[in-house]
Length: 122
Image (cartoon, rainbow, N blue to C red; front, side):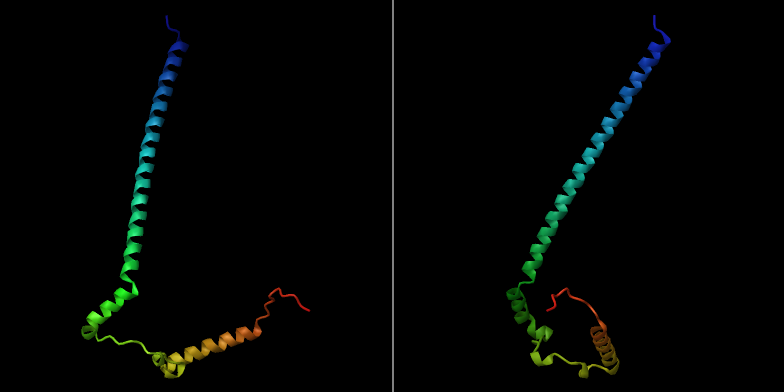
């Protein structure tokens, strides 16, 4: 009734059907995982947008000035005046030396640079 080749072919067909079902099932699982990850990404992007909006509200100059006025006595805050900006002469000796070294190196590099800018010579 059944030959050996028929039994083998039926076995191959059943195995192929099982493999096809397994592949389809795995693909559906991966698709669900992708959809879940996309939803997480959307949620994170929305959270970032909300946090950026909060930051812009919190750092508005008018709001900060109101807080400065409200807590000026407690924090003893003072405005920065233009003459408070220092120079290298007012720094401690070690910092002045670093500044002088950096300035000297920058000057040396500016003198020894033979950079051609591509300008048209006349």
